[in-house]
Amino acid sequence: MTAAGRFEVAPHSCFACGELNAVGLRLILHVAGDTCWTETTLAPDFQGWEDITHGGIVATILDEVMGWALASADSWGYTAKLTIAYRRPTPIGRRLRAEGRLVERRRRLLTTRAQLADAETGELLATADALYVAAPPDRKQALKDRYRFRLVPEGDAVPTPVPTPVPARTLDHPHEAAP
Image (cartoon, rainbow, N blue to C red; front, side, top):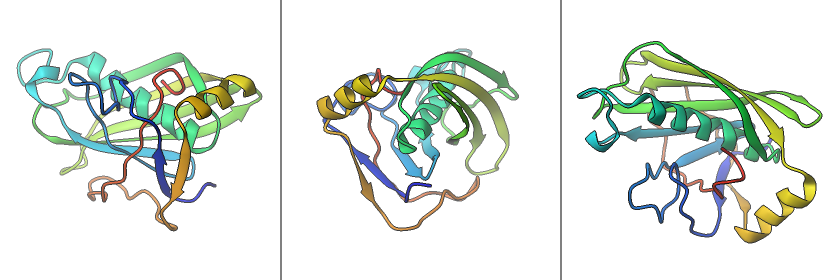
């Protein structure tokens, strides 16, 4: 298992985590071993029905933490299949916590699992399972080189269960590398 830390990469425009995307989610992602998590409060810009987060935004958040769970285990990949169970409406304006992890590696196929919960109450809002296809070694290295990817260790911290707040640690990624 990889030590806890944060990814450092060149600035980029990913809709989910890119700091250069003025209309994106700008998620701050955290990593420990093969697990990635984020906490965020969504603005009304991301709603479907009034005061409810659009389902596509929920899918994006879950795909993002699962994709970065791969990268944290140095298994970069592309989403091949994503299955989501929407358990409750995801409220706008509430603190949310998403957590994804790598659960199985089979050659070039990587299986992940994630959940989204209310960070204050722990109420489960959505779950997801995904299948990723691993990037070929030359493509993985090209992405790392392009985005100056590196892991900065931060001790032996492990992700905490919902609803405990997590200290901010930044993780960014190239859009095409993971989700």
